[in-house]
Image 1 (tube, rainbow, N blue to C red):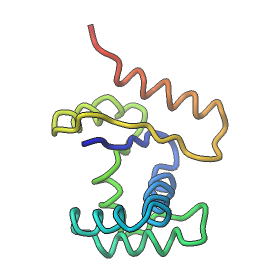
Image 2: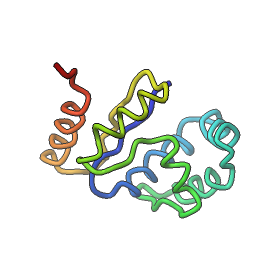
Image 3: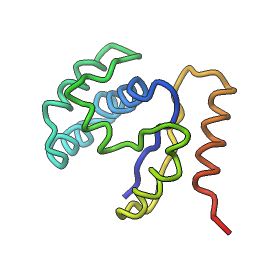
Length: 122
């Protein structure tokens, strides 16, 4: 099981983008799985509605729990403990999804923070 990590400013906006992209552009499997497996059909419907025809959707309030269930969200300072908690819970990998349209400096910072949090400890 892998999870996506979202550590930076604008977490809700990035979670909305990520969820809506998968729910509106990746075929029917992903939204069906999220709705059934996580018991969040209303959240999925709201994400689809928010993301349809909108490149920068807002995260609907009803989808906040879903976003936290399927992504790692937190501040830079929380990165290590949040990733560790997911790995301890059985995730075998994490994936970093960089937000679209952000400045290169911000993207570099995100990669550096994630790399430091996942580097093997001596």
